[in-house]
Length: 146
Image 1 (spheres, rainbow, N blue to C red):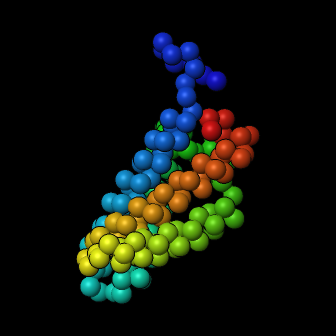
Image 2: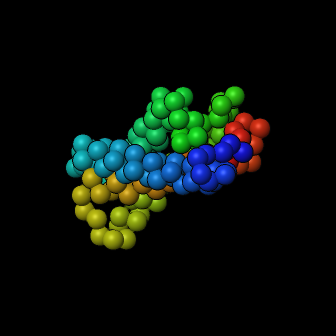
């Protein structure tokens, strides 16, 4: 493990927590933007799926572009990329997360597209972050920090 000033060893779980937090924020903002844009134009379920998929794309783009500079912070493998089969599972879980966000919105009486998008993007972001962290934890040869 690498050392930092004054602490001896650094905790790798802090990086996982930060990545989850970043994924939640980006997912919520991206989902709310889609919900605000498409609210009233498409059905609420379809809006929730679009919001979840857009949140997934935004988190992936952020990991892709900023992950080169901060690989620990964005849970990016240093040597290899994550296989396409894994990303198919992430997309599938994102769609399920979008539908779950829609149902959560109905449970709380949400009526606006922006709030449907916000809940769907947040759930999809959490799903993606958790899957990435579990994958990197189960494949330590690809990333030494998780």
